[in-house]
Length: 449
Image (tube, rainbow, N blue to C red):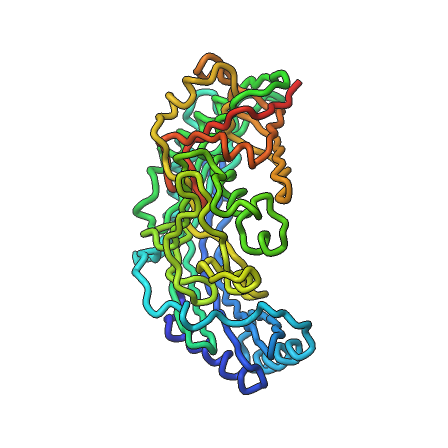
């Protein structure tokens, strides 16, 4: 963190105090700051180096059942004074919002665990990052069949969050991220195919070996060469972990308190009912050690915790912040997230579907004809009906074996049916903010030639 926690907390506390003096009945302030360093590398040469530093402040004020939010990157007195006055003036004329307000004091976090999300080793130099990117690209280009590079990159970032409310909460934390990636092309002319691989962790020491990542990028690109088209049909679809987390993400959107309160979710009447196949569990865990989205408290200062959203296929809870909880007559689940430009909204942290019992080979072995999806295109998701339609590419399955690459196809179904007909494999890894193992979904439609 570029500034001591005490300093950013002082800034947030100052904003709240001045807002109260300016006429706000209640207020909360958030300070976000971060630094990042990244390099791009292509065909053995450094392409660019980017460094950024920034600090954003956000202030939300309340007068009765009215609220207003303002934000700024300018912390000078010339900017702060008018910003605070503007926020209070906006709140006085804002429409009533019966659900707005600070979180009740009984829900606030008073202490929190050490999540080990900040790498305390010295920040890497641009030269060190370039060496990692170069190593990954070199390994990818060495794979037979790889003909060109889209580039490799490596980056490091450190961010800090401070939140203070007039309701009695004050807290701050910092986190880091280290990552690198490589993208290459295989083939020639109009038959070229591209693929990529990456590694991203909170601590640089946890990153995968650059040569291994680069080699996998090259092998994936070569594997996609000479794709075929398939006829339209109804078959099982197997989702690679690269894309299976998207299905869990669609589920999270459907149980967001915002969607439930508006009545715009196909799951709005499914609380306590089987939503997924029996045996499936989905968890959101903000306190995962070194988790990519771990945080010690939520965006309103509320105590957060590991939450089992799906237990043995049954829906157990919504994702709620304070406002949506009040609107639904419930209690916040500690899922508030916010930036500096507006009020909080419900969001997940480290979201994942727990691993199943079958190996990937066993999961595919039962598929006589089907599709193994490695890439999805577009966002044809209807949150009200659950209808699902996306462009896809991957590999055709014949008699339980990967047969050949396919592209220019569309996969379609309805999320309600898809959730109830899922089988997860045992290969869960935590590579993204939202993760899932390989997943087989029965009875979907493949639209091809």
